[in-house]
Image 1 (spheres, rainbow, N blue to C red):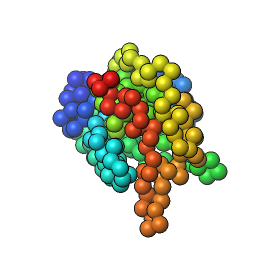
Image 2: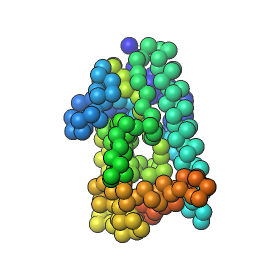
Image 3: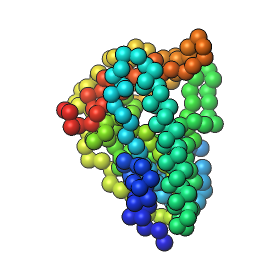
Image 4: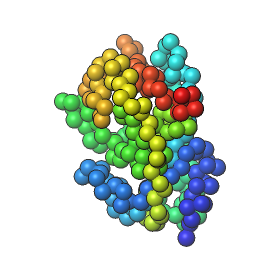
Length: 228
């Protein structure tokens, strides 16, 4: 039987900066159709991991550098997920890889609302990697919100890692809500129809640019707790 320590060793050797496990029992409140078992009926544990993004591009005056970093981070995480998956397969741990972003099947054209097959933000929270802030981003005490998340589903049962025991948003903080130019944040979710015109802005040449990421940049916990 493959141990948790072996999975963690493989994850970090492959390039992950954060790692945690969430037993499928923790997903009792997942929406119908978006539960781990809806993807892979044999799921007993969700393996979560994340990488840190380089931070300073977030503060560039032009949105192209952060857009590029974000794209590369998604590509890198998908490759890390693939490498972890294949290494675990070789040592006998069955697993199903979850994409770090696209593609997804759920799409509401009227509301311009898409939903991933599994919410990786919630996976990471349930695996103890951080907690969701009012900006709807996962925030980790060391790396802030500058992380990209990946996950695998496995049929082997493990105990969950502890949930984080720290609060990520300062009391009564509304910086992200008050500075969203689209008023797309409610404190609990993102109104995607309002957010998409800037977060997925299309140039005249057809490039997709993340023209706005104020909720990420202005957050007091953007870089974690070490600078606060």
